[in-house]
Amino acid sequence: MSFCDLAVAGVQGLQAYQPGKPIEELERELGIKDIVKLASNENPLGPSPRAVEAGQRVLGGVHRYPDGNGFALKQALAAHHDIDTRCITLGNGSNDVLDLLARVFLGPGREAVFSAHAFAVYPITTQAVGAKAVVVPALGAESGMPLGHDLDAMAAAVTERTGVVFVANPNNPTGTWLEAAAVERFLERVPRNVVVVLDEAYTEYARGVGCPDGTRWLAQYPNLVVTRTFSKAYGLAGLRVGYSLSNAEIADLLNRVRNPFNVNEVALTAAEAALADREHIARSVELNAREMQRLNAAFAELGLSALPSAANFIAVKVGQGDQVYQALLRRGVIVRPVGGGYAMPEYVRVSIGTERENDRFLAALAEVVQK
Ligand SMILES: *Cc1c(COP(=O)(O)O)cnc(C)c1O
Image (cartoon, rainbow, N blue to C red; front, side, top):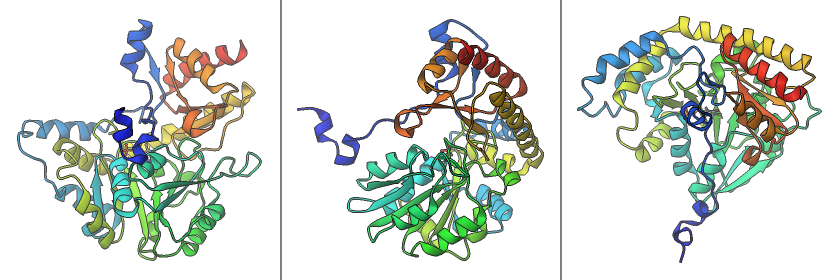
């Protein structure tokens, strides 16, 4: 007997999510310091100082359970989005909310539709609850948005078994995005009894190129759920806070399966302070835009092509992605290989860092690809 035979069918076929390599792990392996990690799309400026201060202030009270309803953070988010607090579901990262959505709207006999080269959590959460993943081929390399979501094909893949469609805008790991008209046409076309999850983890970075704020459609499409996170532009990946905005009935369903106290008190408090620090977000977005241009220019100079990105990372075509990843590791630079489940073996994904971090990356990359 193997315990794998005892696991539920969906879990038997799963592979664990591969996170970006931690700095400390590479330090141990190489015995070197000054490692640059550009592998998990974290904010290179760090968290807002106001968030750090707020989190520290409540640490002394952590013998108490957190506010399981997240009252204060929900109030702040409701004001920020001009939406009723009953429409907000807080998660231990938005990943947690994606799991809640799968538990409520997927299961054996149901299907989840998502794009090829989309976020790795969609197939995991789908399979884990026994639902079937329907992976829709992405747009071709010759398209105006190479490897981007093909929304027409995704809408066509919806059947009476579809419980959820996952749409990432911008998408990770491609960085590609969908324009307002295309999203609206898609929402119009998908039946109202199918939940559309618009995952906007990188939305703060994406305004400059015309990637829409999906919350504008919430009132019109009751089957729309928009997910957001404090892990990326807000710089709180280590605290794990995300949320969804949806109609109140969907939020109530998610709340039924939510772990009590899924978001801790330090995270709740820091997220509220981070939300209020608009200067930190503006600085982060500005740095990202500037360094994105510089990285793209450097890629062109090296003769490398990159996918268009509206996010804080770039997928760059390097040939043998895994070899380039390994060669960069030996030079103390951690990027993300995107072969495997992402099916982009010719690319690596690099998060946009500070100017100094990007310089280190570019110097190492030039050595590796010109060898
Ligand atoms: C990083 C990311 C998330 C956010 O994950 P958290 O659990 O909020 O840290 C969600 N969706 C996509 C597409 C991402 O890349």
